[in-house]
Image (tube, rainbow, N blue to C red):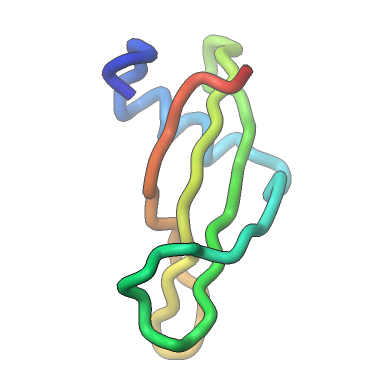
Amino acid sequence: MEADGLEEMDIAESILNAVAIYKKIRSTRPSRNKAKEYLYIIQSPNLDGVAIYTKGKLVREAGEETYYFLVSSKRAL
């Protein structure tokens, strides 16, 4: 975020304005448990029209996916 001059509000606006998940990928994190873990890519603009790329995972609580946990973000190319 810092390298691209993005603020937390830019990222929040981008995620909240997204109309769809761009891509779903399987995590390659070596320390994860044997269960499959997926990361979701969202590409969406903030309110100023800056295209932002975020990668995160959906977190389950009580068996339901309840929120998007941000892993990384940057300006979309």
